[in-house]
Amino acid sequence: MRRTAARTVLALTAALITGVGAGVGAAPSAHAAPSAGATASGLRDVMWVGNNWAGTASIVDARKLQVLRRGVDLVPDKAQELADIQADPARLAFYLAIQQGPGEGHDQYVDDMFTTSDGRYLAVSRPSFADVVWIDVAKAVAGRTDSIVREQQMDGYRTDHMGLSPDGRRLLVSDSTERQVIEFSMVSETVGGTRIAMGDRLRSFESGETPHESNFTKDGSRIFHASIGKVYTPGDETGAGPVKIGPLHDALKGDRWFQIVDDASFGIKQRWDMGKELAEAGYPGMSSAVRPMAVAPDERFVYFQVSYFHGLVEFDTRAPDLDGVVTYTAGGIPEPRTGAVRRVVNLPNRVPSMPREQYVNDSAHHGLSMDQKGSTLCAAGTMDDYAALVDRKTMTPTIFDTASTGHSYGKPYWTTEGLGDTCWVSLSEADAVAVLSFDQRKELAYLPVGDHPQRIRHGFVSERVLAAPAPAGTATAAATAASALDAGSRLGPIDDSPAPRVTSAQEVDLQLVGSRSVPWLTVVGLLALLLVSTALRSAQARMTRRRA
Image (cartoon, rainbow, N blue to C red; front, side):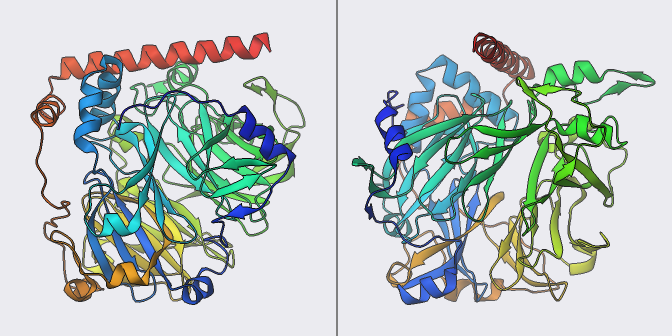
């Protein structure tokens, strides 16, 4: 699908401010008592696994922990998208830079996904295509190529993490190269007399460089959001021997903020520079880039990972500022009078001699969640090849890795709280998902999925859709029942390809141009173009703030 033209959203924004009318298609939140809702409405609770490099999804029964489908195609429009990219030099430059940088030499087809509350549609952010699409689940599971019902392009050149509101009505999408997060509708409804369709673009709020994760509070009134800076640039070291080059590092990486956004107005309530907050707490030289986060049940304490750090940080959003002085501004917003680092927790660093430049997208650890009781954290030790259940009180970890489980825990990339007091862990290098019990501190299942699984989300699928015959190229529960925990096994290659289709000459050409064989001089040139472009955008943003 071709890049859509910019569209007017003023009427929709006004409607949102004036109030909500009769909802059409709005259902209870995917996060509110999902099991009861699913049972009553003929839906099944499932784990949606996005296989980033394959461009597919795997569907796992969230209770039985069995793989129901593999190879569900989330890029049925791939040939058209690649043709459009090839015709646009700017898009082609970013596409190749993303592939050779964040994608580690691979296309990034699937970053994040959420189902609508009725289970009919799946919203998917696709970084290499810089868009978000809404896919008809029944058509996709059946192997049809006409499954995309709506597409929205970003203003920039890459999509990333998404966040879903507690009522399931609003979707937040990080517009990676445009320093903003965009809100879309997940339902068709009437708001303040204005008709809104699923997929409509509504509002946006400002972020720092490379917007990352967004999490709503339980009542949906606030959004915890962080930006991670230019993770694709060199200059990861903050010093050269005894010489500190922190300011140069900061200039290269750009603005990295943790902020709380008011959902009603999309205004910034508080904004912190976590590198400076860590320095105030006695931890100088740590990164400002807040990676995945876990919000405690009281929504006062936030736990987060930061770039290059093998561990996690505990931050109290209501505690008085440690030095009682406004020592910095972040995007023109003064340092808040509340907010303090309480604990910095080191977890095992198994690659102490690895240069920072080799960390995947600057992440030592990338994945953090918490059980419903708020007593245990679940951390993905990305560069260390382990997952850890961490007691929140004592910060004592229980490690899960190849040695303790008997199968690969290669490059864990995400964790999320699952049903039944479980933690779901994507193991991107192992092409598998692990299910850990918070309470029992043990592995319950180890499931083969697809090529480079990243984001895992709880969602729904209609029982009727799952009852239909599986098309060629996908797997059914019967064929994968043995994929549950086999403590002595190690996965072999998994074919997660979507059903075969004709590949256009343009698609073949672009794949060859963008393969690992691209000369490094070309890659450096593309990354330089990316840096110049984002630097210009940052300068424009600063000038706009000054004028304001």
